[in-house]
Amino acid sequence: MSIVLFDNAERKKLYPLNNCCAVAMLRVGIFTIKERWQLLTNETVFIKTENYLSVLYDSIPPGSHIWIDAAVLADKDLMERIFVLEEGAALADNNGLIAGRKKITDNNFNASEALEYFETIHEYTDIKRLEYPWQIFQWNDEILRRDFEYITSKKQSQKLPANCQYINPENIFLEEGAEISCCTINASTGPVYIGKDVLIMEGAVIRGPLALCEGSVVKMGAKIYGATTIGPFCMAGGEIKNAVMQGYSNKAHDGYLGDAVIGTWCNLGAGTTNSNVKNTAGIIKMWNAFAKEEIPVGIKCGVIMGDYSRAAINSSINTGTVIGTCCNVFGEGLLPTYIPDFNWGAAGITKYKFDKAVQDINNWKKMKRQQLSSAETQVLQHIFEQF
Image (tube, rainbow, N blue to C red):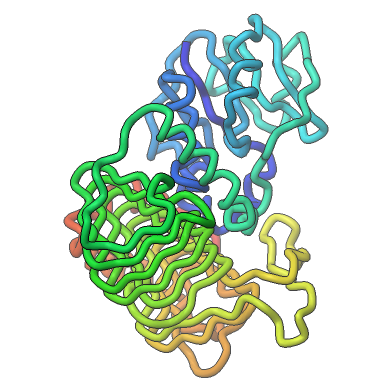
C-alpha cells in the first residue's frame, strides 16, 4: 500500500506556485509536502495532479492506497488517524476529503467528487490545508519549528565550528558537509537548520527560525531573519525576512526580500527590493487566479513569484505583487501588482517568445549543471498556450 497525494479541485488558488508542479512539491518549513509525508510515514508517495503535469511524475500502481489531499500539511496526530482507517473509510472536514483508504483507479479519480468514493466518513477538523500561496510564508514559522523537532528526534547534529558566534547553539542543527565560517547565528528566537553541503560565508548574520536546505549558499554580509526557508541550491544575499525560496533560485545581492515566496529557478537582480507594507499600513490585497479577483491578505505581504521568472537589477516590486511563470521582469518605477505568465517586461504588452524562453531557462540551468527536460518543456508549452 502506498500514499497518493492528490491536487484538490481548488488547486488554482495556489497560482502561480503550482503552475509547473503538483501541490505536493511545494515547500513550507524545511520539507516539501511530499517529503514530509514520506518521512513521517516511511511509505512510497505517488502524485495525482492535472493531466498536463502528469508527465513529471511516476504512474500510480493499481491496488488500494491512502488518498490524501496534497494541500493538507502532515503532522503526527493526523498520520496516526489516517493509518487506522479501514478500506472504504475517510477523514473529512468542511472543505472535503482529507484522506481515505480505497482501491481507486487513477484514471477514474475526480478530485471534485473525492468524498463520493468512500462509504464511511469520519469528521476531522484540526488540520492545516494550504489554500493560498501567501499562507506559505505566514505559516512557515510554525511548520519549520515542527520539522526541526522531527529532525532532531532522529539524528545528531555535526559539531559546530569554533570560529563563529552562536546564541543558543543547542537550537542549531548542522548536517554533514556544511561549511560555516566567521558568521553570527542567533537561535534564541527559533531553531536554525543548516542542511547538507550548505555554505555560509564570512560576515553573514542570521536569526532563527531558519532553514538552509541542501547545497544553498549564504553570501558574505547577508542578513537573514526568521521565519525563512532557503530551498535547495539557492543563493541568499542582502536582507531577507520571513520568505520561502522553493529551490534553485538566486537572491544573491543587496536588496530586500520579505514576506514572500519565490518559486524554483528564479533570479532577483542586484538591488531588487520588494515592499511588504503599504504606506498607509492598510490591508493588502493580492490577485488570485482562481477567484479572478483581489483577496485580502493582511497588513504584510511582499511578492509571490512563479517558477522560471527573473527580475532585472534594481527592480522595485510593489506591495502584494503576483508574478507568473517564466516572466522576464524589468521596467521603471514600481512594477505592476500582477504580471501574467510569459510576460516580457512589466507592461503586460509583450509576450516572451517560447523558444527564447526555453533557451534562457536552459542557460540558467547550466549554471547549476542541469538542463530542462522534455517533460518540463512540455509543461511550459501547455502554460504558454493558455495565453
